[in-house]
Length: 223
Image (cartoon, rainbow, N blue to C red; front, side, top):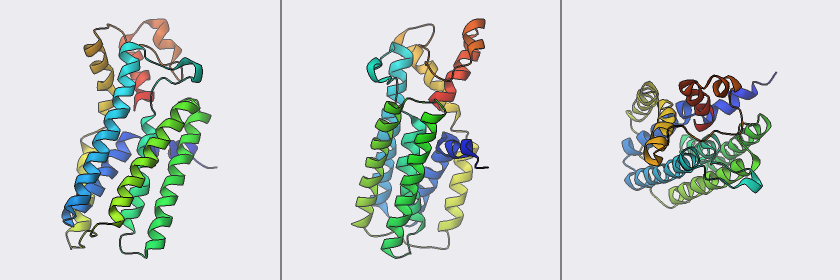
């Protein structure tokens, strides 16, 4: 039996943020300064757009009701933006055709994850489609820049530093940032309670009126 939820969890911040950091570490150790700068910029802009779209709903209830759009999917964006670049970088010394195949495989995996998000009702199709398009665009820009820039230098320190970066970032528990989005949205908007997602929220949270439980449930979607 295929562990479908394991595929969905690939897009979690606990996995993708350390993976993105590992890619950045590889570029820095390889002295590919231009690529490292581009990758940092793409991540900063993309993650910020996703975060603000979520806070816009949590704090102000901004949504597009006719198509069921409440916020961008962090899972879908991270998977489609990071996985293609990750495979492209991992295959750095392989023939170019194989690097492209790796990037396409990463993109396909990210899109499959998006489909599962819809099937399991974590997100509406409109949210996943928009997020996946933005993610694929981010990956395309990074790969396009990588094909026209000097590749990272391979050094004995590259692999150890990359793995250390992954472990170190994972140890910081980046998934905890998901819970902070609710706090920031409430602080900026001045509300006492966040607007509630219409999907995958534990009914006991609203029935009990437990704000902490509600925020925890909401974080499943915010993650």
